[in-house]
Length: 102
Image (cartoon, rainbow, N blue to C red; front, side, top):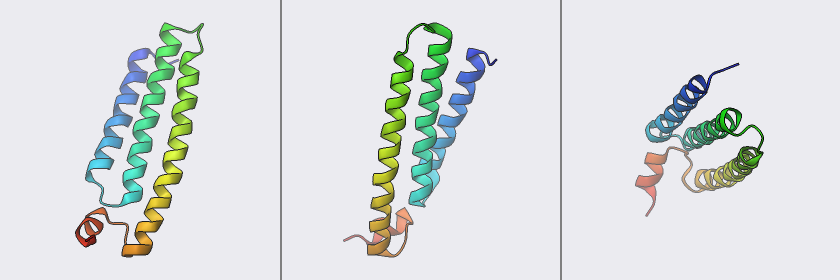
């Protein structure tokens, strides 16, 4: 089994990777993938905290299911927005979309 330190380290690496992808990527799909990585890091924190501090309660499981539901809805809405941006501007490059709107 993993220790709490190992799980939180992996979660931190996932979160930083997701934040870096969100900040540095110009592609809208890659930015959405960064958000998904950050949400998965939060889920790992919930489960690690549950496992090591409150194993008799199920609050963390409910929170994880809520986050997974929100992530699925975010992905669906985000992809719909990206498809509409592609139809209007012909690209998914966020920098070009910012410059072309007007």
